[in-house]
Length: 392
Image 1: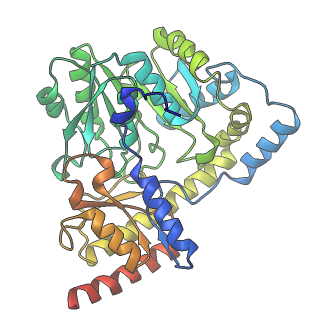
Image 2: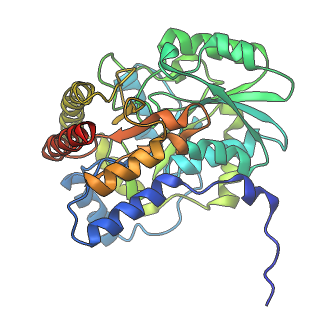
């Protein structure tokens, strides 16, 4: 029986190769090999007990019905309060939409702002799904090559250089996946001014903002109400599988986003929303901050350890839990090298192919969202294997 033809946009969306690689690593582990997973962009921590307790209370209280499409009033007020306490920025709860993860928020943003054929600036390398959100709404991801000289981040100069007919805005990430680098706030301000002056939109993905290590984090919301910000409970709050995020939009556009959410998603998970209220208690904040310090400790171990092995780290990450590693000393094909390390050292890393077109064969992404014990064991395995490899 013939199948119906697929929409042409499906050809523009490539498989998420990280997930394919993780499947191979798990298949190898299933054969009994002690694979160390340094490929997964997910905290090894889970939601703390007080959040789980809040979930249980919400379940027993019957909070399982639809909520408003933009989330519960209580959670939106809690998020607004967190912006005031942590970043010193006043945000009206009416500008906040709770979403089905940051992915739901980015999808809504592209649905609302991207017309067919519109071009959207984003960095290359960058998180692959961001390209695909734009493509899913028939927009065109305009990839801007970035490298160590700009900390793998966009600059105002690059916006000026790459803005052309058809460009409508930019989708940025700070701190970013796969590089773990942040936009200096002055540079972000300049970027916003450049885009604003051209009548474009700026969306900033701040999903890793809470996991910033070297300087006090600052939200792009401080740059004006026209900047759209996306965040999530997945990374700093360690609730990946709960699929809960949010976005902050201009007041005048909030009804439009709410309308789209009503039709596309109905509402975010009611139970996850009720449980997430516990994330903003002083007790929870103490836990999350202690875990942030643990991520910093892991970064401070793994970066010099990789450099000692000859795996160059051209830019030290200041956020998230990733290191973008230059493996060119050992291979001119990071995909083949990642497969070699998986098969021979049982260490799973992600090749750069997933993250764009700018020198992907040169780089690997390492995630240090795992225990120090695992990181130390991974370094030992890599040291032994790379040493044997060079002597062979």
